[in-house]
Amino acid sequence: MERSTMFLSEMTIVDHAYIETTGTVIGGSWNPSFLVSGKIDPVEKVVVDFSTIKKQVKSYIDDDNVGFDHKLWVIDGFSGVTSYEVDGKECTFDRLMDPDFICPNTPVTITTPVNSITAPKNAFKFIKAKEGQVYNTETAGLWMAEYLNEIFACKNPMIDCALAHNNLDQDIEVVCKNTINVHAYADPNVAPVQYFTYTHGLKDSTSWGCQNLGHGHLSFIQIETAEPTHLTNNVTFKIAEALNNTTFINKENVVGGSDDYVSIDYRSGRGRFSAKYLKSDELNKLVVLDTETTIEFLVDYIKETFAEELSSIGATGIYVSEGLSKGAYIDL
View 1 (cartoon, rainbow, N blue to C red):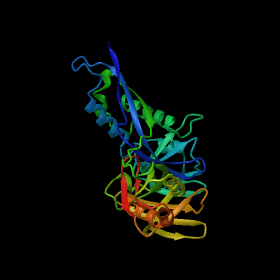
View 2: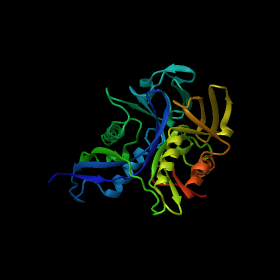
View 3: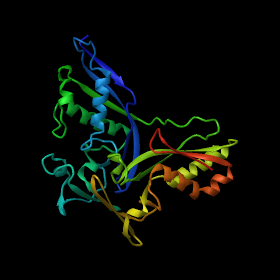
View 4: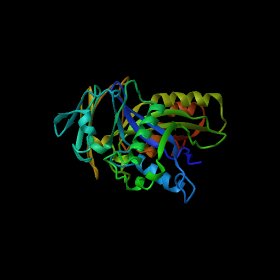
């Protein structure tokens, strides 16, 4: 046997956001799993050492400049973008894909029918979709696999392939499948999860990716009661539906607005982030908080906003996730 295939199941979580066909920014989270095929190493008798390949794949998926995690995905051929600008001058998607055009920290402005967002280029993930491709778990897996295979073939000029070069003799080929596997808090007094998506940006975070304006999550809510009833899940669904596709904004970052728009601006160690959001419950659901938009404050916001519904079922606590496996709990 000269070749073999190894699998890496749900190796990480990719939290992100993407620009929809309408131009709306929507949050998402996935568990990518990988099949890694190649020649069997004559010394170790494996395709690649598990520890090595796990570190390599995760580092490439999380790469600050061109990775997928905690970025706003702009998908050419799918996302409803009306214009791109660099330094106030109109640009094209293909030029932004050119690694020699601008450095990763250069501010880029992306305009859609409902938003205008300015951020360092490396706050975005630019994806060239093939004809007919739309954003979903399957196509995202294809995009991630294509990206990784370019790296292992040393064909991605934006990535130092020194690590991957060690695997060239094995002729590595990667396949990626995305799933959604929620790691909810297990308790018999907690109702089943209900999902919602949201986006935000955290200027004071020490996490490089969390500072990105417009990164997001597929999250869930669970309600805890002293005596579980069928009504609990109905309330959970109602709250999740109200939260779905929301952009949460820290009031401290609001710099202007009107009846139609909200403008925000903040600086972090990464650079300047700014946006102009259209107020539209149908296309651009916005919630401005008096606090930061971390999950600790979001769960408090949910407690206050839906106090009546929670009280009606005797809720004793709520769990709200930030992504698929972590979050915050609050007593009621």
